[in-house]
Image 1 (cartoon, protein in one colour):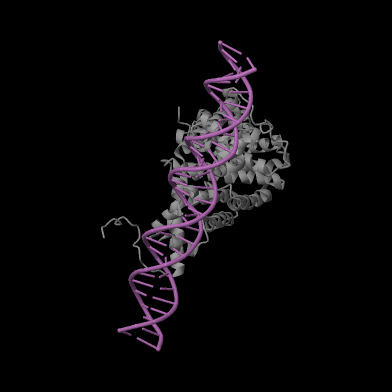
Image 2: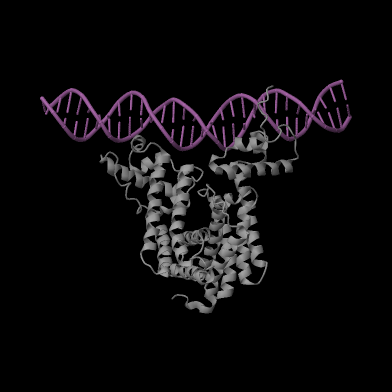
Length: 213
Length: 213
DNA sequence: CCAGCCGTGGAGGTCAAGATCGGCGTGCAG
DNA sequence: CTGCACGCCGATCTTGACCTCCACGGCTGG
């Protein structure tokens, strides 16, 4: 027996309770999916990363897609609760904007870069994935939209457009900020965007529904 | 559903000049890539869509990736020139915002839904694709950023953050607007977003640190 | 009119990756 | 001690998609 397998991440041969094994597999799958994307990620890679062989993977998940969907659901849920929590954290609308922006930044900065599964998935052709990604975007936008509609009195469709815009700003800029390894600290970036968004959104209520001009 | 195809009606066996054949192949490939995504699209599908057989496809393009990259380059270029054109179309900064927003909406509404190749690619793991998508986003943001920096006197990093945000809003909302089959007409949506963005961005010059020459 | 040539077409090779079957070792009850 | 149960591993199968090889048919020159 030569020492070919000295770089193995986890020792092979440890027996784990099923629940713990499942969690470990989810963790390994997340690392591989985040690093490689869905298509480039091989089940062999995930199994190797977890320190088990492929059959055990298939004993815990029916297939690659279900494994991916489990992770996707988990992180969609996380984003949604985070955004809803930010909106519910105060009644001051400016603080709400700030808290929501910060929620996106925190989400993007979170452990393992799991946001890539939601925002940069390469499986959007799969209807199940598309449905989940669209749904979480819509639910976030609806949560924001409710506050906007309440505050500005705009019609539902128009407040949804603005809400989608605010969510889009947060998501896109947070990803850019993370990717650019910017020297701008997170708080500063959030403050800057909050200024932008709040000035933009606060102009609406006083002008009423005639913002058409 | 047979009203869409312009290229399939061509009977098999017609001989075309090389340049024309290449254009036709690009058109067929775009339709298939847009409809199915990169991975789900098969070279057989593209060849069949064009009414030729696979070898001719490979006589015009070395492989699937190069075919995709040719389309991607084409539409990245289109977006960039469109955005630059919008920014150069006037010196009134509010009109610039409006024109840029409208450029994104027009791009998204454009023939064949080619924007999906740029904004919803499922091949972002491929470095060549990633590089192109990132580059066009950065170049658009830089173009916008220059105007912002000139107008507000903000530092480069901060104006880039705002520029990325404005580009992000345009892109995300335009896609949402298209997908939602909204009853809101395009002009109205553009006007609404322009109000939002312009109020937001116009607040900066008077507010920022003005010791900046 | 006819012979050659070149581009087209269908059938096939290769390979990667998802999904699965016969051994093995460990721990426990009796 | 011994037989059993169970979870794990090495090796394998199959599918599907990218990418080329043998026949056919229309154009050119004598």
